[in-house]
Length: 130
Image (cartoon, rainbow, N blue to C red; front, top):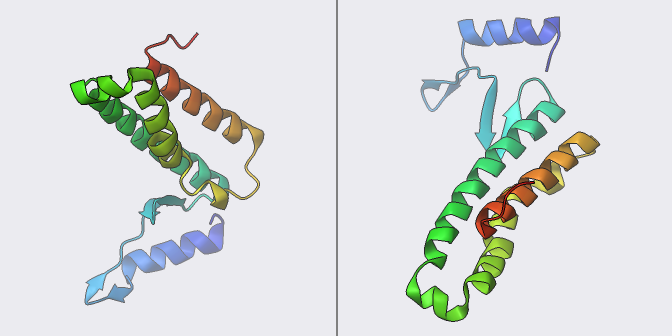
């Protein structure tokens, strides 16, 4: 969190770190735990950072899928059907993983999720973003 008390606690932990299995635990601004980014600035910063990380991973997954869909065996199934099936199965779940923990997100976060979702789909279909 923020505030004078939180900053004092961080300073104390830097001077005298908590020991876990004989190792000092460092103080970080952000850290990832179970696929969620936890930001010391609070809940909304954590949602924002998690969304950005999930979007990067979803885009990486999209490029992998696009490469796989160019394989001859996938062409027998049909390129569009393959893209659709794999997008819904892999990209959606990657982007939206942990979304149920985004308690009361502002509309700008939801608009951002929708824009990223649409952008990745258009990328995979080879269509312009406009």
